[in-house]
Length: 269
Image (cartoon, rainbow, N blue to C red; front, side):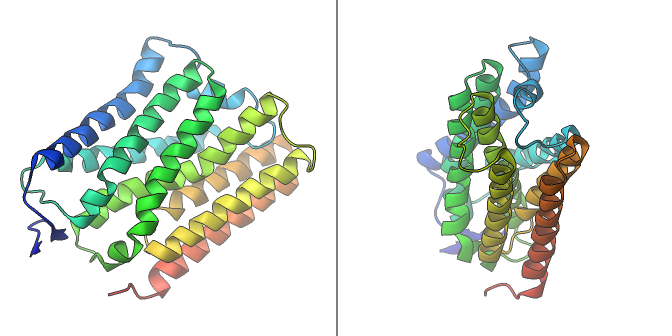
C-alpha cells in the first residue's frame, strides 16, 4: 500500500473495474443534476415543489430551504469530476463510496421523475434507498473517515459532498413519507399528525448526532439542522407552534451537538 499523491492511501493500480466505476459516478452525476432542469424545461408532470406541497399538512419545510440543493449539486459535481482526473489514485474511501454513490445519484435523479409522474410509493423507495446506500459506507468506514487529515482531498471532495447529500435526505425522506401518508389518508390514528411529525423530527435529529459522533464530519448534520430550521419557519407560518418550536429545538440541538462533537472531541488517529 502506498501513499496517494492527492491524499489518502492508494490501494491499487487503475484497472478496468475502477475505470468503469468512476465513469458510472460521472454519468450518474450528470443525470442527477440535469434531470431536474430538464423536467422543468419540458414541463414534464408536476414539479418537486408541487409534489411536496400536495399533502404537506403534517410536516412541511419552507420553500427557501430547498435552495440547499445548489451547494449539494456543486459538491457532487466536484466529487464526480475528480473521478476522471488521472492523478486521482484509488483510495479506500473512493472505493467504499463509489458504487453506493452511483445508486444514490440514480435514486435522486429518478425521484424527480417519480414525483413528476406522481408515483408516490416509488418516491418513498427511492429517497429512503438513496439515504441508506450513503449511510452504510459512512458508518462502515467511520474509523477511516475520522483518520483522514484535514488536508486530505478524500475528506473534502468525497466524504463532504456525499455526507451533505445524506444529511439533507435524512430530513427529506421522512417528510416525503409523511406527505404521501397524509395525502392517502394512511397516517395511523394512534397519534395525531403533529405527534408523527415530532417523531420524524426527533428521528432526524438523533440520526444526525449518531452519524456525527461516528464520523466527526460536520457536512452531515449541517443540512439536517438547516432542514429542521425550515420546518420551524413553515410550521410557524401554519400556526402549529408545538411542531414549529419542537423543530427549532431539534435544529439547535443538532447544530450545537455537532459542533461540540466535531471540534470538542479529538479525531481518532
